Length: 181
Image (cartoon, rainbow, N blue to C red; front, top):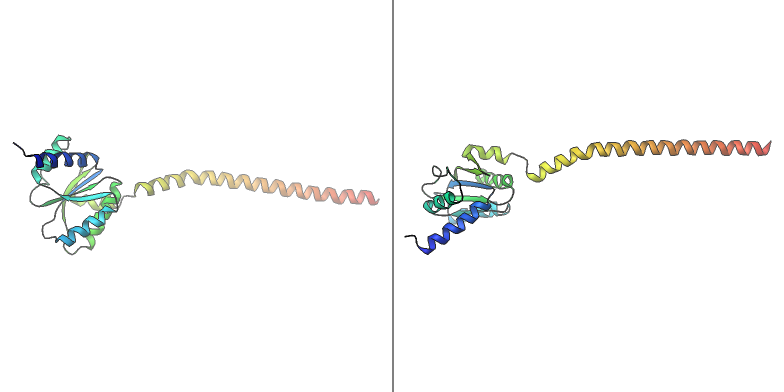
C-alpha cells in the first residue's frame, strides 16, 4: 500500500511530466550541493527545473501519463531536467552548463516532446535555432519582398514627382518667355 507522501509525489511528477516540452535524465553522482544549485540556476532562466526524485515514482508517473521507454535511463541517482518553455533554450542552457562544469551531470537521454532522444542528441537539439530565432527568420523572409516593393514604389513616386517638377519648371520658363514677347 503506497503512502500519502509517495502518492502526492507521483501526482506532482505527473503534472510536471505532462507540462514539460523536454525531459532530460542524467546521473548526478559526484555533484556537490553547490554544483547542483549552479545547474538549477543555469536552467531556471529558460523556464526549466532540475529535480531529484525516486526512480520508481518517476516510472509510475511516466506510465500514468503515457510516457514509455524511460526505464533504461532510470537507475541509480538521477536528476530530471524538465523544460516547460522552449525546449531548445533548455537544451542550450544544459549543454552550456555541461561544457563549463568541472564535474558534470552524465546525461543518459530523455524526451523531446514525445520523441526519445539519446544523450548524444543534446548537441544537435542545442544547436537548433530557438523558436524566436525561427520566427524572426521567417518574418524576415516574408518582410524582404514587401520592403523591396515599397522601395520600388517609392522610387517610381519620386521619379514622377521629379518629372512633374521639371515639367512645371519648364512650363514656367515658357510662360515667362511668352509674356515677354
